[in-house]
Length: 506
Image (cartoon, rainbow, N blue to C red; front, side, top):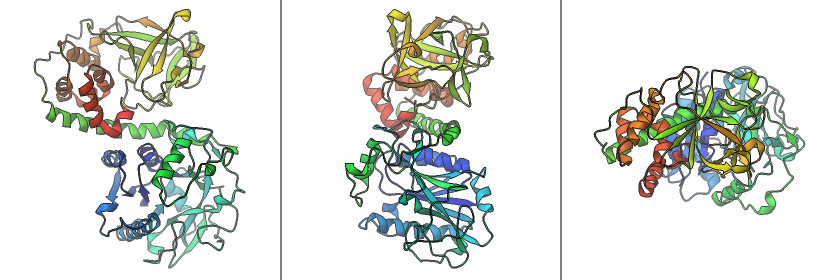
């Protein structure tokens, strides 16, 4: 079964990769996206994702028709009709039409194809009811997918949830007929609910007469999100007259459902290769603009590092850290010590205020991880070291983001979400002269390259280019540490080249 998802995007730099990842993991084969003149990094992120997935991106300004003078609804109508014509010709079995704040939630099926295959044979379209989510009392934009950050939704009695969005069989569509974005006229077959029952429409097609059917599947609709995102939406959607009164403090937050968070780690795993590939492309561009310096000599893997130090990192009250599903966790008491993972702090002798976190498995190989609410996905996230004198410990404050302290609550994920450093925000560091197996730190290939780069008296983008020529993937992993050693002008240039990728790396 071939499935496609059609959407219009505009300035979705923060959420577009989460939306793509969620639906790709559900089994969507192809994405057909129309960019409505985004002026942030949305297009660049989609381009990076298209290296890994079948994503076809069109710009409305480059469309066959001049749609720039039309209203949003007119442009939406035209590109949806064109997309339907295209997918019909390419023999997709099903095509869905969603906005990028709408996420399919399946309750009884493991994948979208499995769900669609369960529908009656004469179903020409399936109507997925909205389940509208509130703002979870968030003011600023969260750094996690909306499926993780916004866990409270409205009740089934809320009238807005009778709205639907459609997946249709292109072969059943009544060609060139348009009603609205919620409903498509069929020449054959029937509209059914997610349970496979016939749909009873209200006086407006696209809004059902009956209460929403959420039992089998629904659309999580993150229409409101945080106050910051609400304001952004009001600025983008000139066709909507939104006021602060529309962002009600209590509406749509009645019911808590955290089950979508189970997929957060998978979403981050899906996105990471996209960011790595995008970063490596940027490094290649820089290599042509800043020809590599010559004379970098790899140090002996038996030497001791001269330009950095390594410490093991431990919560203050002797608890262990580990990785579950790729996410960094506090594992509990010392009796649960595992030799499969150990967390370390990497510190430059030149910039001792900065800490870079990395992990090793039992064979001295780098084991990457994600830190919830920390958007850096390529590894080696930077934190600032703040001494906690009365505790004879340190606290780690997130670099970038909201600048919160890293917290290690017992048997929970580590998260930078505390404004002040208390007990769970205190860590001990123990100097480590060797790796856990007793080898030199320079026997770890990435750290050997780091020592090679920092040994000359000067460091520049040309040095990074030289490392790129040796190993682009390792250079990408080292990039947060390397960026620290650039002067202000070259750091600004690097960040500008990374553009929309920068928050995921630096």
